Image 1 (spheres, rainbow, N blue to C red):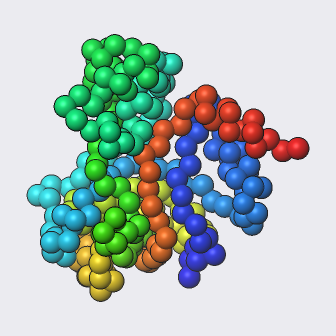
Image 2 (image 1 turned 120 degrees about the vertical axis):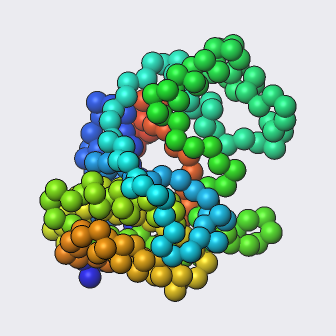
Image 3 (image 1 turned 180 degrees about the vertical axis):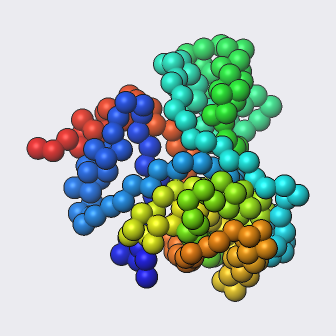
Length: 257
């Protein structure tokens, strides 16, 4: 199966000016991995959560219009913007949840509350604030022991060059999709270029969503030369931003002897 030798999927981020390849080489050394492939996103069609809401979505449910691709770009942040975004995106403790969530976080960032809000709005205007969510875990049980989702399906499609934006828009408009990207998989992944993720409690239902998307792509006249499904077992997600300071400290700690 194409790509089946690669058993771990994760997101790597490095500050502007740093090398993903160099970072991956350090991780390869530390973990004892045999090989890796970097698949940087060229465009984003869907990015969200909403696992509970997706339980009631029927296969084939989709928006009225195709999803618009957001091209990936690099944005330079000032030191104070970094302080604010890191303070803003750390997990909230129970003691922090109340009428005023942000004053203590503003103090931690070294700015007034008004400055904190103004900088946060500026980050939103730069389209750097993707989402706020009370729930981000994929399969980790809640305090009650219930798993919100059991099956994570990573869907791959290969479409001919020139069809990537159209195909991604049609896949991304399906409301079952939590993620949908244009990534170039290369020959080791059968040259797939559209990748998407959905979550569900039943494997058959996840596959029914996939079948509905496949049928829709055919209806839209989008040729698919290859498609596959990868299943994620242990998976979880945490909010993450790559602070240049934290990045430098981490590499200093793990530098090769």
